[in-house]
Image (cartoon, rainbow, N blue to C red; front, side):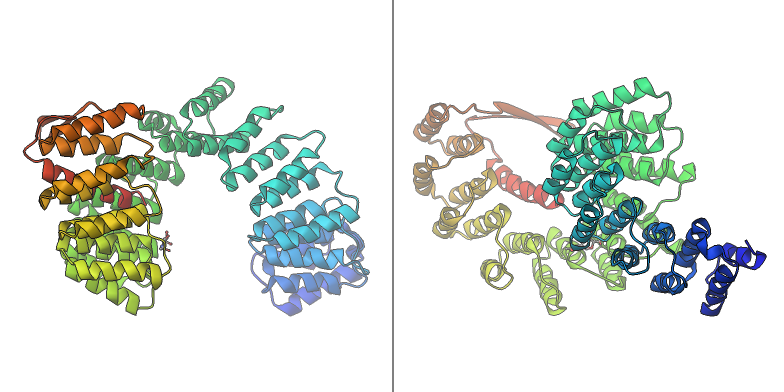
Length: 588
Ligand SMILES: *[C@@H]1O[C@H](CO)[C@@H](O)[C@H](O)[C@H]1NC(C)=O
């Protein structure tokens, strides 16, 4: 290879068009244009150095005579895909597939092209074209082509087509099996992914193990996950990080934090993924103080926290009300100049809001360069949580004025604000606008909120009317809200009417009955209690739990179903309904 060409090909920086042309000339005059390996090298070079990737394709096509074999094109396709430009990669493939004097796709072209389609994100149309080319060119018998097709259909969410191609493979290899599992995982069909794993008759590789562990985690089948973990431990003395992180993630998703922690501690090297998985596992399992402790460890570990970690830590601070730590994270973000994306900004707003620093929450909110509905929700929720119902509604209006559409969570927040501030009219209007203006279908939580709102205002008939038109089975907290309203407004007569409809309830658990019997027991309506109890046994429902013990500030109280009375029953019922709403909110 001429020295000049070697220098050009070795250049790490983009070169001007005329240098590329000079390189082409050199290729031709030196006779190297016939050398497929040199051309492939040239193609890779073009892909990484041309200003626009399309230029690379053209440069390759401008060679006269054109390369006769597909090798340089294949190199270009793979390289473009790897460097994040699958669309130019597909374009290169399309040129090649169109035929003419540019050579023809060969056995290596199709897997490369299909990979490009899979990376396109919804590149099903392109993928189908490539599939057709593969069929026409007689490449479907090749395993790499079939494997790439399985991967492609999986990436496009077409599990059925992936399975069809997979089933036609005579002897699937580990790549085929893993591609099939990933297709099911991407399609959310975790049970089927597991089934594929159990059907597998070749040794899994690390990618396979990582996939099966994801499926176990999503299904919450810790025993299967443990078996995979154990199986791997027996074969390999050392766990590779990719498998280690997957095992960690599986235990975290299954909420086995102690096991996750053990794996975490046993990892020889931890990367940012390991820390992120462990931290978010702790936060999701509502162990925020452990999460903060771990974050302190992380700071001495040398792994720098990224935006995801910082947002996770902020949500731990938010649930703990740990303002000091939250402020520290805020300062850290400022000090390190970490970019304020929507996620980080919203976590900061939420942390200050939940810690009760509404001013800081607001000032962070205004500093956010980009906000979305979640950011507004965090802010509005801050006002709602701290009893500023009117401000919550005011910011709701501002959000709408800014052109954003509220979502279901927004309405849970504002309806909750109306409920706790007694803004009946506003609540009714919001509930209507939710359905008619924003085209959102109310969830159980919204109905529950409205029942609570109407009930508290003494509009028991209206609240009951709403329960009757709910499209879903009312949950315990909805009945609880109505029943405590009946009590608060001395409408035990109305409770009887409710009782008649209890028969119609095909409730999955016995929660409603237990709650009803409690409420009646409190009101000393023992005949009614007996009727509810009768219902319990008639429907073959087990009463659960018979009693529950809770600890508050070191003191334990025991609640027994049907106990004659409890001095705070009223408040307890209300509290339960608030808590249920909060749990649903947090879970989102
Ligand atoms: C707001 O942006 C964050 C971060 O990109 C995202 O996770 C969240 O789902 C977005 N919220 C909505 C309602 O789109």
